[in-house]
Structure formats: structure tokens, C-alpha cells
Length: 219
Image: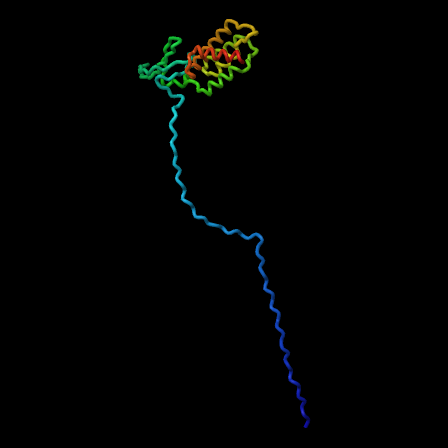
């Protein structure tokens, strides 16, 4: 009887450790999102408003105020009067123009529209005096037309416009003399500006006139 050959037993080879799959590292972002800080809201401080002292409107007038009326110049309010006109009771400012020995009554409600104003401030008067020292600007037009323009400037009540008339009509040494009509307008403008300058600087009108003439000679 034939004997079967024994097949050698298969030997199992030890299995090598399998390589673990590499763990992918997640790279950090180059521009990370910044963390948002939530700040607690601070209680708002209450603003305390400091009330400024009220300034009286330059268009308001009171007794004893010096004012400028366009066609008459500087006057002083001596008081208020009430009168009945066309069945209506109206209040009037009573304005005395001492030099002209004249009294004017202006309705309170029409004081501003009439062009009546308070005295110029020191800054406004300084501008007028600077204008006075400027170079004369004489238009090449007929004298009758220029005379109307000069008269309108004088009656405007503006110290700067009046200074322009004085500047343009002033004749320094070596220049032709003024005509009669030029002289009249020049003196009217000089008198008007001198009166306001005297009231603003609280000096005599003669002193104010001398000051203006000295400035004209020095220009």
C-alpha cells in the first residue's frame, strides 16, 4: 500500500506592520480672522449746555441810544411817544438831532425798514478810516451823474460809502481846487463821518474832524 507523502505545513510569515496613512496637517490660514472684541458701551456723559449771555439785537433800540438815520446822520433817541394816526395807535421813537436843531419821529414798526441803525462798531469804523486813506477812484463820467452818486452814498448812512466820497473829493496840495458843488458834497460827507466818529470814540466833533483831516493829509 502506497504511502501518501505528507505535505509540509505552510508556515505563515509574520506580517509586516502596515504603514499608517500620514495624518494630514491642516495648515493655519495666513490671514486668520481677527477676534472681535465686544466692548461694553460706556454710559454717555450728559452734556451740560452753558447758556451764553443774550446779546441785544443791533436792530433793537432804546431811549438814550445814539442812532444813525440815513438822511440826517447821527441823532439820539430821547424817548417814546404814542399817537393816534388814521384811527390807529402807533408808537414812535423821538430822535433829536442836536446840531441841526431838529426832532424826528420814526414809527417803531418801521425803524429798521427806514434804514435807521445803531452806531458803527469800532471795527466798522476802522474799515471806513482805512478806506479814507486809499487811492481816489474817480469815474470818467459827467459831473452831474457823479454828484448824484456821491449824494446817494452820503444819504445811505454807511460810514464806508461816506468815506469813499471824502476820499474821492479830497484835494491835496498841488492838485486843482474843488468846484463849489464838489466842496459842498465834500463838507457834507466830512461832517457826517466826523459826527459818527465822535460818537463812536466819545470825543468832540471838532477833534474827530481834525483826526480825519490829518489822515487825509498823510495819505
